[in-house]
Amino acid sequence: MTRSHMRQVRLVREYAEQLASLMGLADWTIEVCHEPTDVDTYAEIECVYGQRLAKISLNPNWTAYSRETQRDTLVHELVHALLAPFSQMAYDVVDALTLNEGAQCVAKAALAGSEEWVVDPISIAWAPYLPLPEEQ
Image 1: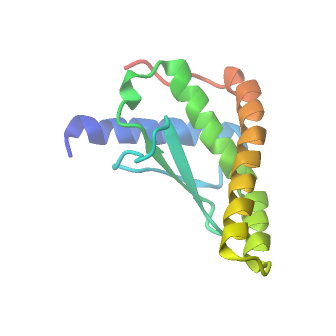
Image 2: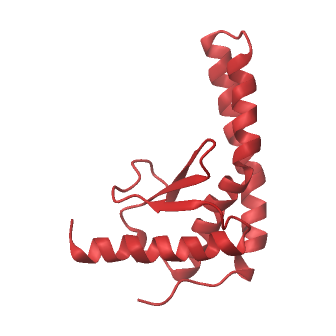
């Protein structure tokens, strides 16, 4: 891992912590993973149930994105953290139901899709009111 990569991870973490604080998530621990996301998206977040821990993985091309795209993406991911208690409860209910594996898979996919339908407009409305990352 290069120094510039380590510096980039630190800067993104500090910026994400700043955003989290402004978004009511000051009591969350924000981690930015050194390994990039393995899905075709700008970033992804894993919220660790009961720990208020958000692990954010970035696309390998993160530094090529505009400052606005970086802000908008991190706000989007942090809105997922805001909704984490509700999302976890919904997934727990699906797990508790006596559904066959196929039905559980369909239900969880529907929950994930519904969450995106909620996260997108919230993050789109909120992001312009939050600071951009520092220029590098």
